[in-house]
Image (cartoon, rainbow over all chains, first blue to last red; front, side, top):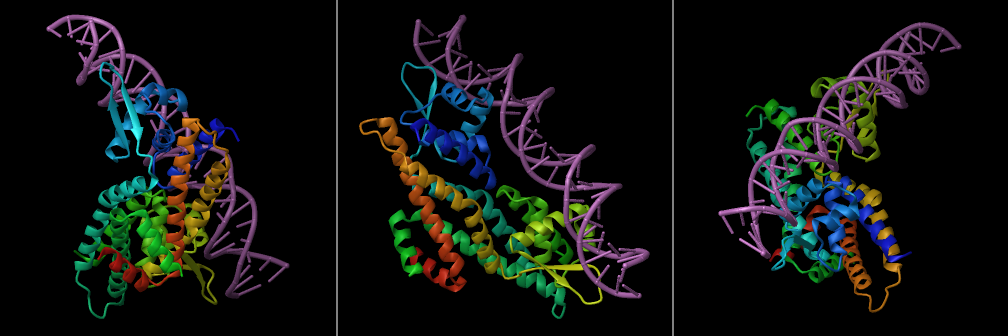
Length: 168
Length: 168
DNA sequence: TTGAATTTTCAATTATTTTTGAAATTACGA
DNA sequence: TCGTAATTTCAAAAATAATTGAAAATTCAA
């Protein structure tokens, strides 16, 4: 396989994987392309390589910057902007965990707390089932939240070590 | 908050969360409803409670059964089918981890192995960047894969214990 | 400042995903 | 086995999400 073919396959596959996880295909492809590019790229570069419009590039770059995955580089004496991504995949994973936790898990935890506060009607099997299930889901969501928080703060090697122990 | 309102809020929120993670809203709502229902429900029950068509219920129930999250109950002397879901959220999480691993992570690991096999052109900084990034991503994907595998096999209490140690 | 290069915005369009509903099929009690 | 209740299928329709492209806004070298 040629280098260019390998790059294309990676960008393509990353886009597909992203859609399965609720992330915009183009956003993932731009991110993938920046991750494997030696040098920062301009909007024009991204438009040409992914065959997409200027507006599309602009909006997805803003989202990627909001996610803390892509950064802007300004070169003195040059008008146009250059973009680059963090290349350390562990740092990227930590950043994604941090953002998804903040944006998606936190609101769910808040809701689950509210639902847990709804009084159980003793003797009402229906009410009891509801509460038991909400309790069970709360425990797991809080466990996942804690795991993401731990991963976010830990070093890759530390997680690896813990995992090896767990698998043994 | 009334019990019925609490149920509705849960079903609604679960559907919203699902779409953010690449899962069909209705599928998640059916699953949520079955998780908090004391008794198994029929297609008619689901159609009425979620205000959706028969075909929609039928297709999403099949998907949920394929995911191993919902089961069918046949009652002797009765023609119609009853559906119920596993209510233990930890078991549900393990099942979801198992399926996503098989369906999505495995193909990615296979691709990354192929890309790692592409020969590096020594001295070519572009080629070297590509390989370094793919290596980095491979490590993290394999770490995540291992974590899901470990979680899948472990007990909730064991994960919790490990996590507490990690956070300390 | 000025003005052209560059970026952003957003209404309209296009693409994708989900849902419907009725016909076809299945399955089971009588 | 028969008749029909129940389920499944799938093409068409609807809903949702992503993309375009050109006008508006911004920015910075001159």
